[in-house]
Length: 140
Ligand code: THU
Image (tube, rainbow, N blue to C red; front, top):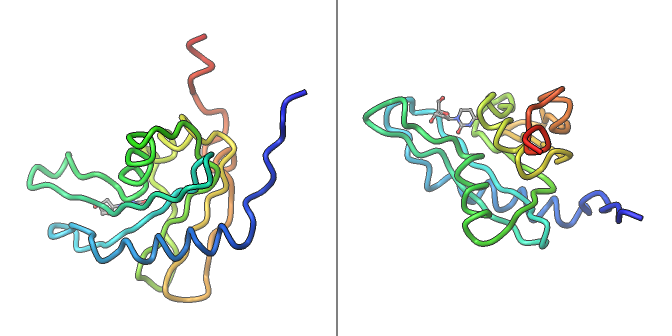
């Protein structure tokens, strides 16, 4: 029988939020001036963080979520259980469409939490953000 992974614990989510908030200082966003940081809880239980990294050639800007996920994958992780996004704004920011697709690759059932500088939060899941997603299974 397939082993069902338990929901991330409150303590791992607190760790994740701390990592996301801590990564904001590294945001490289001189063009949009919109700072974003993210952290992901990988299958191993380790947390990887990232920030948005912009480029003078605007189309090459990389979102915080993808920076964090690519860093996890580059460290050998292949599954993502939760994604935390932090923006220093009054309202939380949800992952863009491209990031939703990248989250789907490694965390099709991932919990997605977006926090900001007020008590407003978004708590959702990847299937709610990207219903009917195209993914690795479609190529089988
Ligand atoms: N951005 C993210 O990093 N994550 C999101 O979920 C939305 C947008 C970045 C990309 C760009 O550097 C800036 O925010 C403005 O779009």
